[in-house]
Image (cartoon, rainbow, N blue to C red; front, side, top):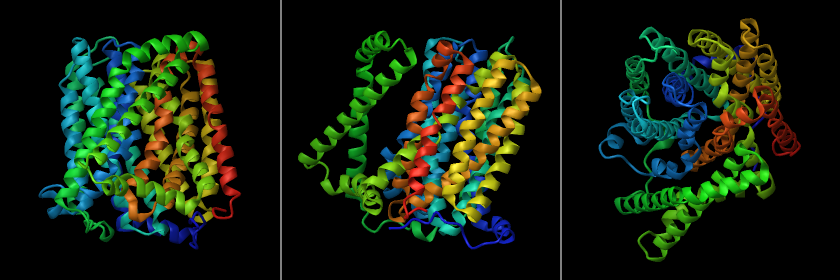
Length: 517
């Protein structure tokens, strides 16, 4: 089966006009709703914790709260198949789940707003749990928005919808990044004088900003392709929920109770490798593997005891995976999945430590908000629109390759900034180049993932792709702070650039296949 990565027969004028299509415009507002929560875990929370006196290595561990994005595929089948009481009948399959997820996002932000990490260890733990809740609910929102986007328009609009979605996403990140930092400063919290009430008010206002997404969800139409599945019934729904609850519980128990053994193993591996970050990464991967094994064993037991029909597991999880390998063949499928899993590794691993890096160089919150957030947003938006247009004109794979090269190259600019220290001109140059390349790469990458997806399994397959996209980078990114402590910023940025080289090679290998060229 061939996948449409080719250029479309549109001139530049027609491509620009297509940006006004209602479906394309809708994705701008949904993108805002999706981008807002992420930066409240991934970026602004870092500043909050640093001002509260939390150690840098602990701060970067909080990036693991976004691992929910990397395991979206676990509950994506439930979102794809289960109706929500009252809401599904009133709004439809996709809009009901989007609204439900948005309500959970608001609840998580309100919880975080009422927890002071500087108060005691208990509050810090509860804040971490609230951040996990925010990551889970935001990831759920992403699952449904991605499915809505793919089902609401044909392939010819996907590149432009990706561009406007990313634009909205980045605007949401701006509000949650620069906006949150400005607000925290305005309300009186600084690096020298921490104020919990300032961050409390800031996160409550961030929760209020979710009204943009809620209003869009209520006003937009339900896609024709997302009508409720005819095979869904209460018995199948109950079995699906049972399977999910037991498997996830088993995964969590295995992961938690392996913590002590994992800590001992980490010490052993660290002595062997003399690398704390690498040792932690290996041990976390082993713990994740153990959790997945236990979850699979529980699923097998539920089927053998006939509490759950085998067809439930097959329909929810196995068929979407089987479909992908059948469509592309084993060799091409492995190459595609490797590319999906590694494409964003350079920017995600670097992004975890970016705010801490600016902080250590002596930049103030307002300077970071102005340059890294506001100016950076403008460059990302320009890059996103440019990437969408170029994908239409020259084909997705060519722009995907361009984005990979630029992403690796711009990470080297951070090395120069690390050597120079505090330098506003260089900061503008580095942030501008980095965000322009990220915008181009992201627009092409989302269009690439959309083209890989079979509309029969929209939510599940796209969730697998986006989960895989962030899994390795975010696990590795959790150790970014420790890596910086070990090798310093300059060597760390060189490492992130080198991580981008396998991505370039994978794209070249894939492009040689006549199916994709």
